[in-house]
Image (cartoon, rainbow, N blue to C red):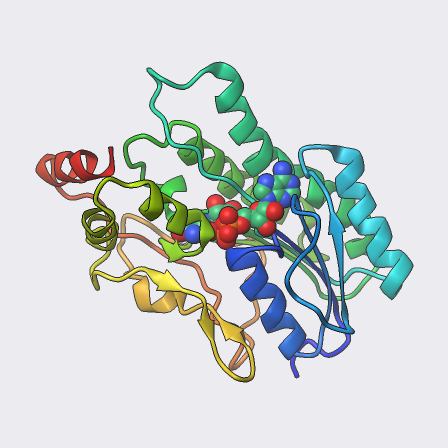
Length: 273
Ligand SMILES: NC(=O)c1ccc[n+]([C@@H]2O[C@H](COP(=O)([O-])OP(=O)(O)OC[C@H]3O[C@@H](n4cnc5c(N)ncnc54)[C@H](O)[C@@H]3O)[C@@H](O)[C@H]2O)c1
């Protein structure tokens, strides 16, 4: 139990990656404060509470932290998983839609970190982990808001790592594609779901997407199965080296396969659109 009695706020705990992360922390003995835009999370556990919050609103982010302190007395860790993906290019994306995506994906992380940092500072060994995306360093077509928003999360993470070292370690994770409700929705909407699935998988050397793996004991996210380390895509690290927790949740920095040729980019574009 490597997180016995640690109090962890997990944003986006009502779905996908955040839900998997929350379950893993619970399995490792932590208290979890989940939040998300949905009215409730599926996780039912004596050591977990849920706070509905729109993280684009600073006061709602602060409310999540206040509920954590009211219920469990402190905050030791923050994991920012909440996010959205809108599909669209510069030509067909209005400014308001663009800013909405930036506001959720980047502004939400900003609001949550800013609210939690005063509490994190009070504890020893506090950490923040922000879920960015491989698309924050390598764009694909039709993600005119998503890619910049995730690039912003990566740089925000670096800035905070500098500002708060050594008292708070701040890191980002750049997952490749993981099969979550966010991605499943794309398949459901596609004219040819199988073709879209194959094109997504072809972005990665192993031709596989990640999935939230359910085991009897816990839920793990086998990101590592998808990753490949390329010199062009160094891991994003905080100014303070992250401690490695032996046998911890399979959460690691991911690098991505770069698009190596124009023809490949064109091919991907054809299928994704
Ligand atoms: N699934 C992937 O392939 C993938 C790949 C790379 C990065 N990511 C990132 O991982 C994170 C989780 O993605 P997922 O696939 O699990 O998505 P998901 O759609 O399954 O879950 C998204 C979560 O974000 C929350 N959320 C959305 N808008 C919010 C708001 N305004 N305020 C508070 N919470 C809000 C939702 O309540 C939900 O819990 C996102 O940041 C996403 O960009 C996902």
